[in-house]
Length: 280
Ligand code: PAF
Image (cartoon, rainbow, N blue to C red):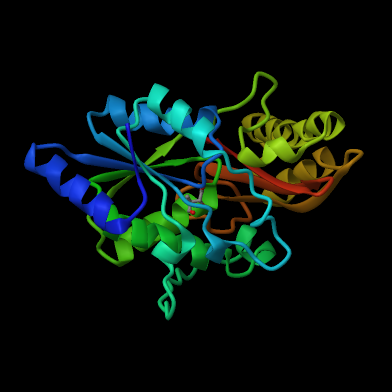
């Protein structure tokens, strides 16, 4: 597995692969891998793609006071894990490679970027859409792989790819969870042992909401109340708990189509998100 640092190097690599008839699968990440990332790589490799994994802690998607500086980074560990998961190349650019001096172009996706994490983290999805659009242009993959855990992010990227006619198939891979249900996240490493126990409230609240819908509840407000109650646990501070239509994140009063339950909460100093799609 090669580690490439510059856009020129990765472009040359991709051109060489294509000349040999390869199709490229991109797995965009911010590194500090967990089983969820490795699953994305395995899915890309399993589908026959040459697997390009980007590792870039993207400064434009972090707001002031967020965890950009302390976001966990460990390239040696990541490289070993990616190789085991079948990645063919790691693209690890510096910030100045992606955003050279004078940089001034950003991608703003309207609609699906608003509300939920978009309300709590102004500018976040503008940064995500911008860097993912740049990665698509740099790597020009046939397919790109994202985790369902970042549900709104996936909707933003799908909208962007459709609106800007980007010729890339977006594959969404189900959330990988710890044995007790906690969604895998690089940010879980911030949690103390006590916070780790408290963090389980997110998944438990989602399961509560799911049970309600499965038992026939169709009023979104009633399900949202149950989600909020499920998150009223020691050490947990609610950010949002909402029911949206799974297909387009539209707000609903009555659940008539597949729904997605989305929660975000602070556990100590760590903001965690999770979601569950419930078929009706
Ligand atoms: O999900 C992430 O890790 C990031 O938001 C992404 C998609 C790599 C863009 O920086």
